[in-house]
Length: 591
Image 1 (tube, helix red, strand yellow):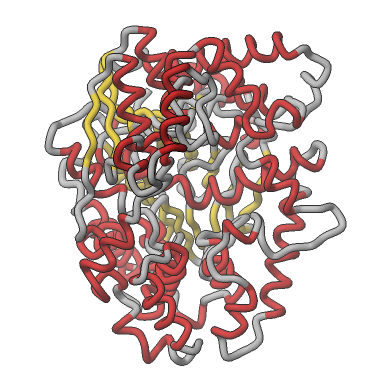
Image 2 (spheres, rainbow, N blue to C red):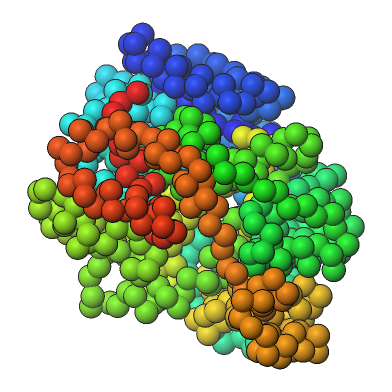
């Protein structure tokens, strides 16, 4: 099945509202001239789809004249005929379930265009923004389309939403920067009609204790079988893939399984050559006999890529992520294959379990969904930043997070895992897959219900520090586990050569180790955003400089100027503070 890259639905709306939506969509798609559009009028509703060649195959008309539309990168063999049979068998639309894995949205529009139904995959991996008024409504996978069509202004902003943006860098639940714009919940079916909208949970993925009594050997082999099945069934769908390699576990696992299958893959890594990602990726590609290339990002991307970023994402998150664009632009020049992504792999395997359970305690309320060291602006910093009290807004965020902890069933550590999946994963990390899809197409093998349900049934001991995944890879993919990376302080398989290098590093002057023994030096991250900020200056922070007078009505500018000075001095957290303010300043100034 072919899925469109994105969609916009608009019911009624006057000519100006439709014109503004069309203008915002045109601005976004102007960056991708090879994409095609299809516009379909269904009674009172206009559906606009965009994608690659064959976008017309993304829709299907049912016998009653209503329309189905498929968006995303579905994994599975369900045909329109099978979907139609399953769909017509369910008298209650909310009881129908998606027959695909992967990044998937399914739309149903009634024949008169008055009623919409939207099914979202269990991660909500493609956010859907909507606003619903008595006389018109709009929904889109592009936040700027909804904002521009509705003409939201500073008076429509939510202080609580703004504080989420500044503390977390993204939003939570169905919140956005605007009080009257929301996102469709993950793992749900949402129905729109003359009475408004209502959402029902699908419970596709639920926490259980099904495997808590299983032995380690049995769990290890089951994990291997499931993840290999998920990755291999994805890789079989295309003759060639691009694999972005990092120092983590998920991309190397995809590469190892692909190499084992004999799949044609080109691997790439972006950023400086001496980081752990760059050093690890080069070694992984070498032991798997895969082509590998490092792509330098240059120093101008924070300014040069701003137009594309705001046209696609608007104020849906902070402006962190533009480093991905020059990487994809370079790949575009060599006409690569679709990208296979490790998106959500680390979360399912348990990377967040330890620090989430350490941070969140049942009797302790918090306005942070993650520990403080994962956050951007701290509460005391925000109290000094804003003129007016923010305590009530912080309390509203606390109530929201407490409510999210109780959305899912399971024990405490399991509920906290959904807080991560339906928070940061849903609202922020999706940008990499979304960008990849716009450029070349993307597949996300870890968004697999069978594998996800397995991971959500494991005891905490198997998840802390990703123990089960590391042990499984140590046994079945030892070659890539002799190589270190960001997953642990040392490689999972310690070879004599590594131990000799570690001993040598202890004898060398510390200044020589990064150059002579980069893997031992463990340079975790490059400072590409800092270098770009230094090269571009205030241009990289647009539109903060031109909105200083407007910002000054909300906040003191001294902390903003201090963050700029600290960022230029090399502090990455200060860069993130400024990037969260950029999203606010962008909406503050209007278009």
